[in-house]
Length: 346
Image 1 (cartoon, helix red, strand yellow):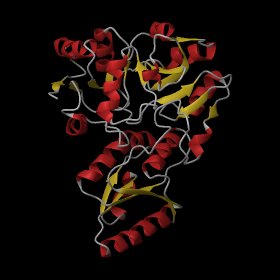
Image 2 (cartoon, helix red, strand yellow; image 1 turned 90 degrees about the vertical axis):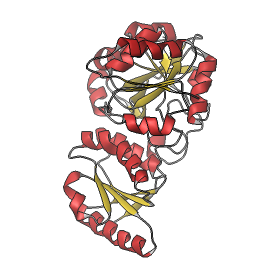
Image 3 (tube, one colour; image 1 turned 90 degrees about the horizontal axis):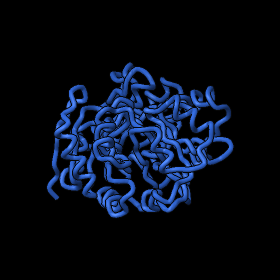
Image 4 (cartoon, helix red, strand yellow; image 1 turned 120 degrees about the vertical axis):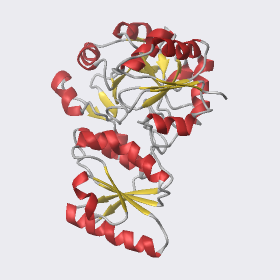
């Protein structure tokens, strides 16, 4: 497949380039575009045949639901019903932005888009390029992350191009994504809302606005959800070619443990990589990639670091553990999925 590729400056959007890709969407083709979280692989959410092309491009199981992206809050009422006051408060306070809400769907949304469920996951991205492509297409756009299913989600244009050129109709390269973690997914179909996937908008922030929020029990376990209501809840996710392990314990013990395992790996001709906070980079032997100085920076850089490890042909990756609260909850969710829940105690 010949892929149309456009470089677009988010600060000076070329509408002619946007129109090229909007035409592809209107014709039932797939287009990759940046959002503030990760790059998305989009198609017309209301066109079953177009949505099937997303699954084909990703090699994604078709019972994994897709997120529907809109550029106008009012569009929610065309796609969903039973919209609670709490859902309206979340939309008013966090849209546009990195949060997805799950609502009961209307018949206009095909089961192909919803993964066979009677619910639909909807979000309104804040990225100006994403907004422009949705607006110009004139349809809601279903868009999971723009990667082969199970691989780390792409946050940089170069990574998208390398993996997806030739698999989709169009690619818009629009710089790096700000947050680097997919959106928080909040199920609003129950009396007490439930976080199905943690993201940069945290449980604590949401509870200040709408009261009690539950966490989906699967977030604490490694078992797959039998019927996932949101992306990232089912199947192994975010996995590079290397084996990933999280190393848990106090800082000094973790450093010593990883360096000892590095030496063992060297003896077995295995290349080791380490992901850590910036201040610890020089304390590790082997290739160490700093994820940042704050949890927000770690979240922004996590997927990019996993992809970089593959470029260095690393066999085993060790990651430091991060606090399992606030944004750290989202980081640990992605890391545990990436590692297949393999944790080593230091």
